[in-house]
Image 1: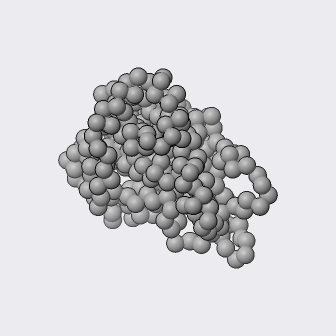
Image 2: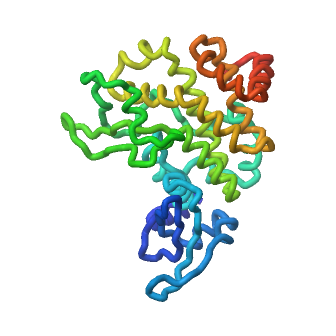
Image 3: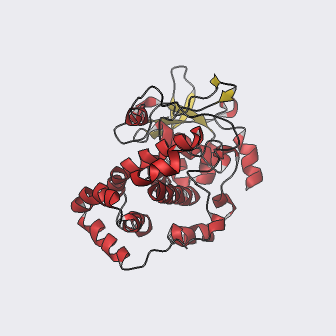
Length: 317
């Protein structure tokens, strides 16, 4: 499979041999190849329609007007590269993910297993305080005294996911390339999961779910305000960037859980079991408890699930 993706990656968004358009919310178009779409999702292939354009040429299209461009783009990256970039793992597109090396039976078994119980060798390293690829870069300076929240919310939609370019690359400061933080990926992981579920792309569904869990788990573990000063801000610019990422996801966690419980059916029990596990694990922290209290009041079923998780001693093993 990896060899296939090495070949397909060069054809990603290459209009030269494209025979299909995918139209996203707002009318944005992506030129793709029907063979690739059919290989990954017969459901999407069945949605192809044909019509004549203004020049009388027959054009094949898939209408996904209810899906954001960013999410469709990530799904197509997976189709062509076996992986997709998000706001933490830029460059992932150029390296196939672990799910493409799994058999269909292993993927199904993975989807039926809580990610915290999976073998660590089959999951990604989503460490929020590790190296950001092998490129050298700086985070933004805080000398101007601007509020972090303003920078975090800039370029984001009301749902929390960025609609614009989230990384400004190629700028040079003191001989270093750097990226500007404008977004995060918990909403994206959830939305990619929903799209993968809708079109029955099970490997992508597993990858998005694992990313959702691993990122939230590490962020909730390290981003609490009482830990931030010692853990993050006394280190280099990269850790400052990571702290902003962690803080953004920490703040949006209740909103993401609301979206998850409102949009994921109750029959999808595994992903719906992730929020109560994480909340139970952090509930002894006063700030986190206050942070999630309104959420638990609005979702009694979630609150009950949290209490059930508290009956099981939390272990990091």
